[in-house]
Length: 132
Image (tube, rainbow, N blue to C red; front, side):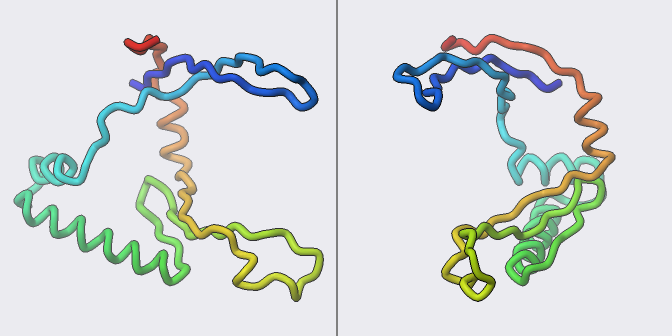
């Protein structure tokens, strides 16, 4: 179940002097599924012990890290594809684009169609946060 809450934020419109309140939906981010819990869950469903599962996940993470550092994309089964991305300044001339115009290097995920469909079909419920 995906739960969302309503977030309020003030925005200043171009050319206007005052901020206006706007509202939008935000996913309530539950406790993260951390590596220890993931290892335990997979170990509980397999013949591997938790330490073996932890080693396998750590090794997979190292290999994914190295692939991304090398500019390679990584397909993660039915989750999707991790791929390195760069952002750069826009230049008027081709020869002006250099390593110095790169402003950020990050990693993105292209979700698989199977995961997109699963998320679209997930039930969504509105909640009220305790502080609101």
